[in-house]
Image 1 (cartoon, rainbow, N blue to C red):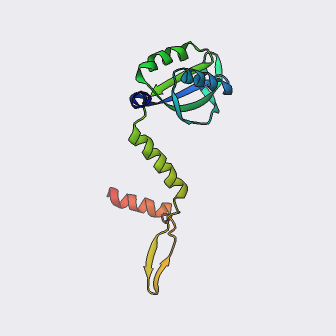
Image 2 (tube, rainbow, N blue to C red):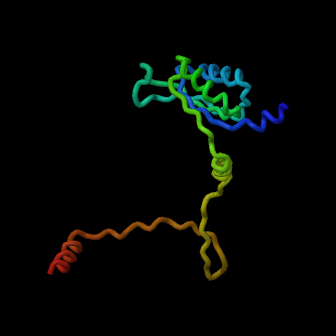
Image 3 (cartoon, one colour):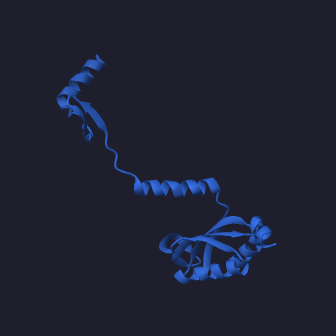
Length: 152
């Protein structure tokens, strides 16, 4: 029976703004009350808000990926709304392909070597780093002459 319940669970992500750093524990308690499985928990970081929310000028942003049975999402949402420590939150279902792609892209960025272009030379291939070419400086007098020619 437990396997059947796990199959029915879907993955969700909740992003939230909390008054204090430890207020994420409020969300964790609610999730554990519904027997949600925590898949990933992002670091909580302090941010300055663009506009005050419930008279707060700064908040702690964080996110949690979890799996839960879909029928409990509405109840969970209502309980989080009633919690005064959570300023704002959003629960979404992240697309699996997108999530896996983001993880793969982050891994590539970490391992990615710098771009070096190879150019053939007479003695064989040598590695040369191309510099950006700066445009030639045009004198004002030449520019005025060209403009006069064009206007004639």
